[in-house]
Amino acid sequence: MLGYLTMSPTTDPQLLDLAQSFRTTLRHAVYLSRSMNGEGRLSVVQLSTLSMAAEEPLRVSRIAANLGIRVPSATEQIIKLEQAGLVSRHPDPTDSRAVLVTLTDHGRTEWEAASRHRNERVAALLDQLGDDERATLAAALPIIEKLTHTD
Amino acid sequence: MLGYLTMSPTTDPQLLDLAQSFRTTLRHAVYLSRSMNGEGRLSVVQLSTLSMAAEEPLRVSRIAANLGIRVPSATEQIIKLEQAGLVSRHPDPTDSRAVLVTLTDHGRTEWEAASRHRNERVAALLDQLGDDERATLAAALPIIEKLTHTD
DNA sequence: ACCACAATGTTAGGCTACCTAACTATGAGC
DNA sequence: GCTCATAGTTAGGTAGCCTAACATTGTGGT
Image (tube, rainbow over all chains, first blue to last red; front, side):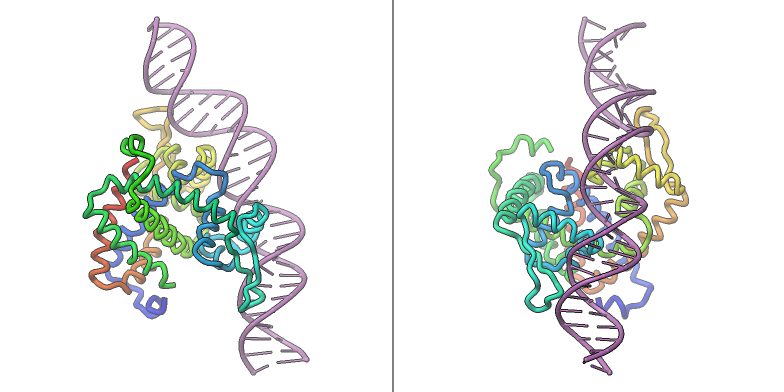
């Protein structure tokens, strides 16, 4: 994000075009993701929280930021997940103010089941692509990851 | 989606792996998108609705499906957008039951301003990529679009 | 043509989630 | 050790989303 702060306000038109396309495609992909959200009784926020915690223990503030909600709202949902036995909360060893949210065994089992189901649905879509298309897609994913980690 | 209904329940492991990676990356990109949502007083749902209507007039039921909410909830938000002068509602000429939501001039102006701002922020991130990486990303976007339109 | 049924939105009422403000507790700097 | 910043939680109010019921228009059978 250092580059962002120091760059000129007028940006390269080509970059803006690609940004526009990227954002539009991302939005369409989210529509797809949302539309396959019907099954299961966990809310979008709760399932996203499980997904985050499945990768690594996270602070409440980080979870709230990723979800685009305020910290008290995140706390509320995390407590519900805790009461459901899906996550646990422990003080961060390196900073006793912070709370690390981790998946319980039960939570990981539940998340894996939900994840497997969605993977199958997406795999069915990927099956309709050609080999070259899948290769291009696979090559692009790390690049998108790179974008998301530059904050 | 025809292919989905007729395919075997056990899917190719490689496809499942790619599906998993795709969903994870998509989720991370959404976090980025959410985190740059602070500015502006429009809710996520309202802004998404504007984005949809900016592409083409859409039915209420379609908007609700894309947002992952029920039709009455979408109606409620659309009415608020209408009262703010951002969208207008008219019966679909081809089906008087349906309602088409379109952007007003004011709505388009507002949406373009918000969109431009976000494009600049994303462009700043894209600027950190190499030319080859941007090319790969650009090539992948139509493929992702293809995935999202196979429903 | 008519009748029953399906599809699309809207209205009404209740519940959940999210927000701001205030508070507690821990870490950081002078 | 005092002051201020940071991380979460609690409390209370507002807004968003849901289900159920209804009005209107399209569709299909007889």
